[in-house]
Image (cartoon, rainbow, N blue to C red; front, side, top):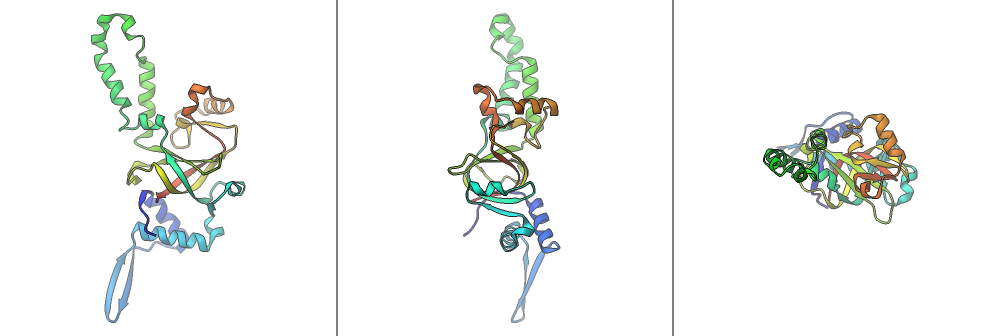
Length: 240
């Protein structure tokens, strides 16, 4: 079946294939009845070889297709997993992205604040403070255009999550798709990880992050957290 990639980390893909094949293949030549044809080694071709190699040598590749909850009892950091799931980008992450509009809105607020001073302090009570605006901009800059994708599995409490580098995003990743990635962290039921403190995006000091993770977030804050059990991934591919 032909694959349509919404996300493909070509650098990680080349590394994985090279490790399994003992080298990088840049091209392939075939000769048939005197005619020589050279084929480029495309990322799509590399990905198909990776799947073939991983399925034929699962122990060497650390390959774990996820078909039920029982698979998670065996998964460890470093394993390469493959799961079909419903993928979404949390609203908080969308809002902080360059396309989310939140930063533009804050900039517009700041541009009109001098004019709003004529209404007195009461007219500005509901506006975010300078500290709040600066904090939002700091987090947005830290993401740098990256997104955090979350995958929900059928009839399972487990979540999959991973950061997506903007240079590898080919199209909208949300919806039903296959997600492949290398496990970087695992947390169990009852643990809550702030979305903005997940690996690769954290600006929260370690001590504060640990404190946040030990307590259950308030009801109105839960959309900003990812509840365990969950697996954090270095995402390799999203396709359907």
